[in-house]
Length: 305
Image 1 (cartoon, rainbow, N blue to C red):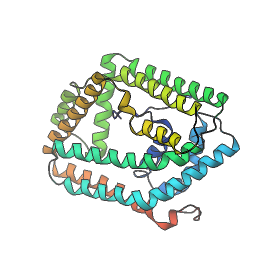
Image 2 (tube, helix red, strand yellow):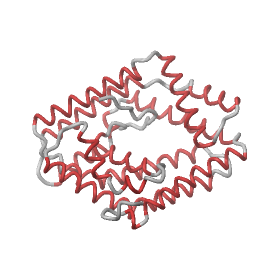
Image 3 (cartoon, rainbow, N blue to C red):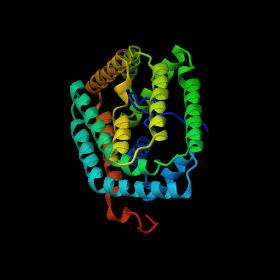
Image 4 (cartoon, rainbow, N blue to C red):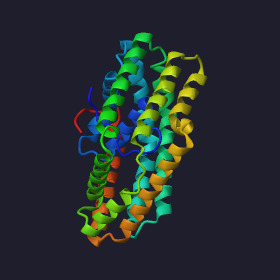
């Protein structure tokens, strides 16, 4: 069951399994191509297929899950896509001039607040579908999550420190080239130098995944009637960092500050061509959002988009 991890997402809670996977799927659609509408209107089926790779659902559980996802997607289209579009427009307007590190921090916080809003809405209907997991299903889920943890350990934390640094640099340069185009030698050197200052939290990150997963599985094994159960799961999903020790939290915060300062310094040296490239990226993402927001993309619309 080999999967790629959410590498580079240093925000605590990258393993917020159930609702977070739905959230990520919705976010990915923003930057996909012409098939985005086709995928968006079938997200209930795709999400059920993805979750099914972790735990085998009964027909009744799968149907409840699909219904929950349909409600989330309808709400998301009507209320959240306009917010994302406004956010991209703000980023595009700001790309004419160098970024400030504090401004980038604010944009990051705003993006995370929109993710939290999605989690708050998505958790209750989706969790209802999983309230009745039996012991066999919980064992299957636990085994598959641990298999993924072991794969992540081998792929990332199991590497040498030098290999992890090289991988971080390749990933950062690839992302930057996507958004601004080719980088100069000086720009690449700046990125390399700043990434050298990042604290290596790979091992701690995987261990906190396990701790969070154990908490999640504990809740799922003792479901309670009424809204209290959904509230407890929502709190776990929204605040995965509530169990972090001070050392780990400090390292993550320091890493984030290093990245924000690096991006701010890079932006001062962007060429006109790089700024135009960045604006095109934001424009293309906004175009994808507008297509997803069209009424014709609603569930039940014709398949041909």
